[in-house]
Length: 104
Image (tube, rainbow, N blue to C red; front, side, top):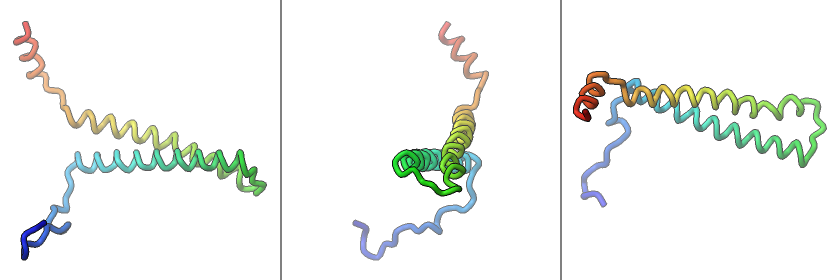
């Protein structure tokens, strides 16, 4: 427990400006969430199409939409994740040469 009279930090105490890496991480997280939810919606719509056999005229147009969204979000997530991984470990040629020199 906290000491009496001591306040906990609030969200306002955090800096508002985000760095490029934090924005990229957030974009990867949102793309991953979109991928998961669109996949779940695609499976639910496929199950509804199979089990309920809806006869609405708009149903054949609507039920594949989550599957298209899954493909698009998968490509977006993969691209963003690759950029995030590349930004974490920038290539430094001097270190690799030094490492090989020490290994020899």
